[in-house]
Image 1 (cartoon, helix red, strand yellow):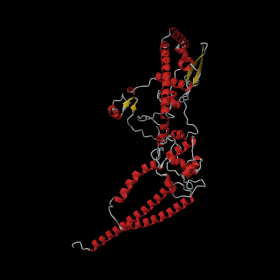
Image 2: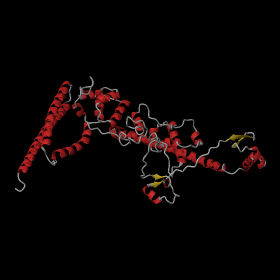
Image 3: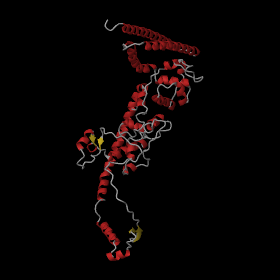
Image 4: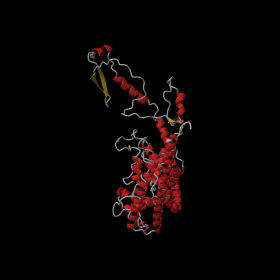
Length: 480
């Protein structure tokens, strides 16, 4: 399961349709087992005779060997060496090219050669390879499956030291039987075309290996990288072959992101595919957990984006009328998976939907109680560290800056609360729970201002006391 699926895994569907899904899965597994047994029997009924025929075809054919020997003897010029030397002009180097015709005759032609004299040059020192690229790639030696031992015949190469970082050897691992791959492909083809089972349901049955994990992995991709044997069991019907190419649909935003992001460099100024330069600076986007609740968005500063902005419509009666289905909801979920805290005003532009509808759908995807569980723990640690840790020293400058900052915070919070209350007076609020939350947020803001002012006064007093003690110490003689 990808990060996107884990982030938006919805439990109501599993709770309501679990029995139906279990029964459907049992039917899929029964059909898959039956088809797999049929294909297995047909394949191993045909394979022994086919292998015997291929082995017999490798036997020597005396008549064919006699014909080849006769043709070679006809190609040999039986003239004396002296005659051949007289016919050749040694001043102009050339070579003779003989072409064999279908009727058994030969056509000879003389090709002149150009002499090139090259001066002696020192050979290059020994090196492993020369990479045909304008960049260097750092290939670290980690734990991996070693396909072969390099420089095994070199006496100066320390094989034991090289093998210390190797996890396993390729020749010791279990190799995949190519016959089993043919059986798996034919089973998947019959289940898809004969029984009309989708490729996703075939993967869900877990009878066969994954058909398609991505654009570079899966049974279909691996089968496209080899030459398949056309055995009679795979030609009993005239159904087309399974699709070997894989490209996400134009409306599959999630699939397109998963296939494109690992390839293209996230740096906008770089056009290099699989760029190793900016890989560490700009990592591939991962699923992001939200940190901003819906109430925080309602209380945030900002001008409405239009008449249908979410700042004008905060009642729950409107939320009951919003219902997205199909690709619209999936597009919003994919965008929120990469940028979970993007405001509805910007999401509305990306989704081509009204701002207030986007706000309602985001509230359903990210309920406030889920976001609160994620945010509470770091805030609690920060609060304890800020308010209960003893500072190492105080000075007058820090006390003055803290006091001025606190006064500015008071002014900003007062202005912000007046803006919030004016917006809520214009809005239509019908839900009493929303009103209670607004009042609670306002009380919380007032408490923060009071705590900040108290800390500023404490810091100011301690700073002045420290300065007074230092000045008194300077006036007191050292030998007193």
